[in-house]
Amino acid sequence: MTGSPRPPTETEAPSARLRALFRNGQADELAIAAFDAGRDHQIGVHPLVEILPDAVATNRREDLLHTVNRLLEDVPEELRLIELRATLLEQMGRLEEAEIAVRRCLVGRPKHRPALTLLVSILTQAGRFDEAIAILEREHAERPDDPTVCANLAVLFTTQDRFEEALTLYRHAIMKAPAHAQIRLNYSITLLKAGHFAQGWTEHEWRLKLPGHSQLPHETLLPNITPSLDLKDKRVLVTQEEGLGDTLMYLRFLPPLAERGARITVWGSESLARLTQRVEGVEIVQVGGERPEFDYHCPFISLPRAFMATRTPFGAAVPYLSADPEKSARWRDRLKDDRKLRVGLVWGGAPRPDNPEAHMLDQRRSVPLSRLAMLRALDDVTLYSLQKGPASEQLADDPQHIVDFTSDLHDMDDTAALIDNLDIVVSVDTSVVHLAGGMGKRVLMMDRVNACWRWLHDRTDSPWYPNLTIVRQSRPWDWPGVVERVARMLEEAARSRVQ
Image (tube, rainbow, N blue to C red; front, side, top):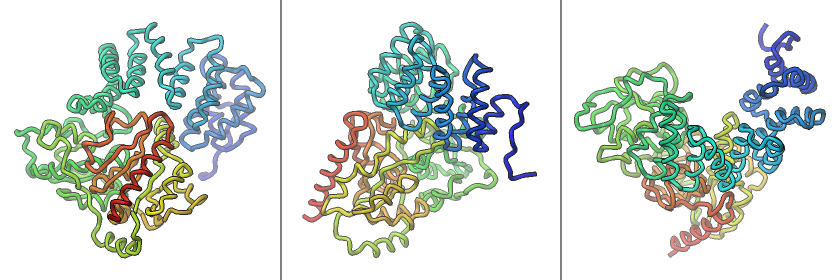
């Protein structure tokens, strides 16, 4: 029999029984079973914690939180449940409640490491970096040779651009745990953000030892490009890795790769296929199916490492992406009566609720549409929504002063054609920045304090996109200040256009 969830049996292990009840949506039975399991298993984590991956994968954190709250009515001092509650609240963006909960866990046991780690994460998410650093500095004073403590403190130093201190800590951590792939990857991010590109790209290859990255044989990975490397007629398979923005950013390396005689196949996503086909030097674009044959393979994010010692360490010059001429012409005709400054707008990234780290990152990088009232009030500007995904639903609540043609945008190729007919793109740090930037369009990027490594630090321009201006928060969550500066820039652009 298929298609129906089976009822859990009484003889199953507690975690399996709890998971089955949760998946079946049996809230009352789950609460009773979780209470009994917690009472019978008082050593280690609470059995209900085993459900967290299911709640994350199915975006049902609210359901699990409801069960935790019900149990805490009966066992209000059950610290394991309070800690689970704090974890859920943090991932849901309810940081004040999460902090209150986790601090309860630390009463009477101030050095409880899981709770301290969670508190550091909550404080970091809230932008209270100094407080988070103070906690980790105390841990580091007690355990100076613990590679995890060293690396965690280095991550926080990086958020404050304290690069030399961070790199010193990473090197000590690597000396103690040289094969720790996540520490090596984090080390690479600090190197890149500090502008140490050559070493940073080399260290960044450690990501390939982590889940979710290319599993193709290391022996056929594209080596560093040198004058002696013969790529003439070699089949190079370039594979998508991580988000669309990463792929759009690194497509710039395909033209110089083709100039060396490589025959390039891109094995990527459908949403980028038509756009990628127009990149100079791309021979084949394949979506899905059996793995294409190759002599060398290279994930997109390994291309900068391969090119770092060449005359094109940043790939082809901008623009390296282009719009479909026929689609662009249709948009040109459609927008011909708009004489104002045409501005594309993106206010949210991809929330990815199944990935806690990416989900919380998106909370920091996205700005609620309601915060953009100053942009919507500009007289000589027409705003065109380029927003796709869940954040686009905010437009339904308040559609005024934003033109929404996104129902006609089915992939990045469609979006590129609309962007081709705009004057400026205003966006948070998401894939549209890379699309517009790679096309050579002027971009105003609204950015968070603790920015992605690729935007470096303490600068408003970018070596990747010459027409990009970074408008960064002066303090965590300060979107009003960012929006005000963007509004002034748009006003100036509108005046210049009239003149």
